[in-house]
Figure 1 (cartoon, rainbow, N blue to C red):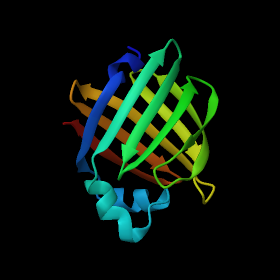
Figure 2: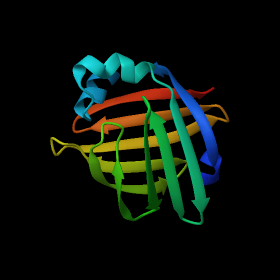
Figure 3: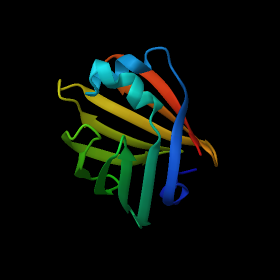
Figure 4: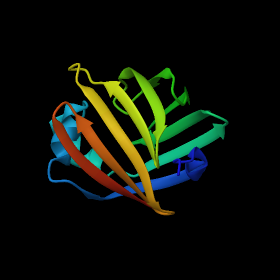
Length: 140
């Protein structure tokens, strides 16, 4: 069964509820300064998604910084992360997952695989270079 972007439609607030032992290391690898990792992990994420066919606009607010970008499933687009870093990203559906792939400031591929485990829980599998981990978000 496909992921179905409409599952994320609307504005929701998420909080990290569980994560792998190496999640802090992964967060640093994608550009969060070591001094800000705990603040980043504790932060709520407000995420809004508007869907129109295979196109979606993702708006997110983390630590008071809001970013917005429009993406097409299967196509490359540009996004800005919460640290203000612009990146080229590709989004696609793979089975029951929504997958984004981009390259970090170190040139490492970063793959996020999103799965909804129920209406209030999102599980992300993360892979950056050879480092793999995960994080679960709960809708609040």
